[in-house]
Length: 138
Image 1 (cartoon, rainbow, N blue to C red):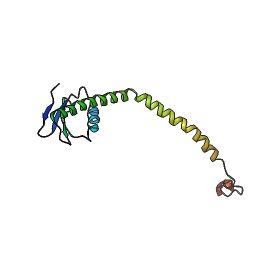
Image 2: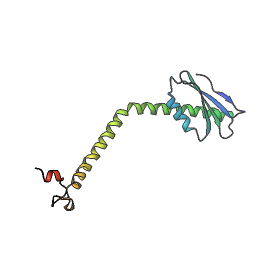
Image 3: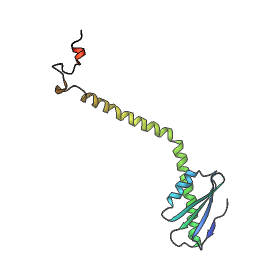
């Protein structure tokens, strides 16, 4: 792994990320977490190496910039793990949601059947709603 490139004068640190270890989804997720503390710039080739530049919103010394990069790597690992767990549990989540929707549908169908019984005003006691062709069929 490459070392960080610190530019204290410009208040930024460049963090190399191997996209074979961390997906772009994890890189975006980790970057999003740091939006409140730093300006982020992503560059490089998503197949070989992504360069994440963290530019502090406040003035940071060298140690603080290194800590920021370390925290970024920790968050990168966190996002990668969450994405992996999410992929592993996708079928279970889909099943639980489908079952919940199906279970919620049963009482609703019973309620609809109750409401669809013809009310007194809906009954056609005079036969007005019968089409003329059916009523006077020859």
